[in-house]
Image 1 (cartoon, helix red, strand yellow):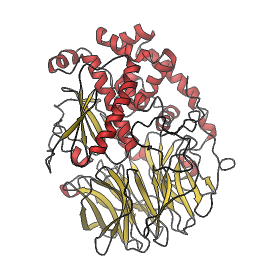
Image 2 (cartoon, rainbow, N blue to C red; image 1 turned 90 degrees about the vertical axis):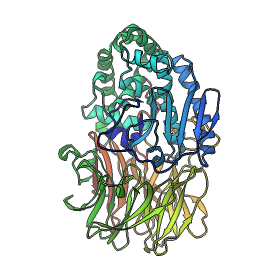
Image 3 (cartoon, rainbow, N blue to C red; image 1 turned 45 degrees about the vertical axis):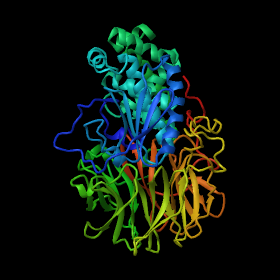
Length: 608
């Protein structure tokens, strides 16, 4: 099972990668809001089921699956014995209604592989790179399941699963290793943080989010030191010896624990030098939350209130997802604005993927929620903490609402069919205006002060990204990991005139450039880029090609918001196994000549 790893897999997932139909959640019922008229296409190895207008998604998935299967088959030296059914849902809301598993599927679950019939079930959220990754990830589970259990018959599964079960770290670690083509900068972040802060865990005890990324690192360690062919050999021997330790001892001469000792030593040598090169979050800003102390894990999507005195963000401190308003100076809670997951009116706040926005006067806030099965814009009275308006919209999903400075419009990104595009909502009339219509993933709009232009992030072609692949490797050529019929997955910044819908690129340099936020004076844009291998905050000037970094963090930064005076930025940072809200101390350029020292991964040195 794959959760949206950047927030969800690494937040709450503890289940194995193969789901049985016996998974249930006590006291809750799965609600079905509609029926699905399934159609299918066939490839050499797969039956791909889809419905509605999702044929382009199914065709794309066919290309991805056959390409991924070649890689997996070569890595494991194994060929599928039976065809694999793939079920594609047009949204996560539809995906949650599936009857392929009885278990409830929280918003963070991005796909699963069902054991009895070896079926893969996946929703499409609008990002084709996310879809490629999840398809490849789940296909590894299907192939490994076929290899270990000798097919997908119920009797074979029941008789063999009791004898040998692939440990979570190996199953999910290999799935991430294969689907990420070995390594990626986000895995680098998680393993770097675990190594530096002392929570790397022996593999036999990996049952949480680390099973995915530490597992990926250990699988890469095996492949780099002993050869990629050993990955399949270990599984084949495990099937016969009924023990991973015995299989590893025969194949590579080490048990799990013995391998871990070597692996942990290597990670310390790799990552400890980074401590002297970079800063921890509390060295570059003032923390407003303390996840290691207050029991929270997820503090995300911060946004300044227009008066600059308060900040709103999502938190899981109460075990439920909430939107809270806190003092921008002390972090003391002013009030809880929204409580979710307590009724059908607020089933989900989309806190993993979507933020919120204040009205210009600061009295109202808009956010996105799933309400009685429909995507909705929700309007909150900030002073009372009460929802005063709900607007249910006919989209598969909605993210990134952004209130215009003149107060008349809300920009947002929404999945309509198989495309995630930009739209405007007229606050007075409720009229919806479409701004983009193409296969590219258009997200995270931010208004200029005149309410005429949006700066947004998109994986459409950009002149500064021709030599960076979709994993962020600056040394790779275009299309190096792009199965499908178009190039996708590399995000950069663009501007769109909301009256003419003319789109032009914004030159802030190459890289995965995301989450743009226009400064209060309209002259600059702050954004997050991983061009040195770590997600840092950069500031670019909209009327020139000048840009520079303002953070050089050790871990990674997620989302940001300008203070109204333009002197500070609030952001969420991952550090010591949790996400916290930080307000910068200053916004001065860092690094040398506008560049940060690259990580070994970016330099191509992560090959041991």
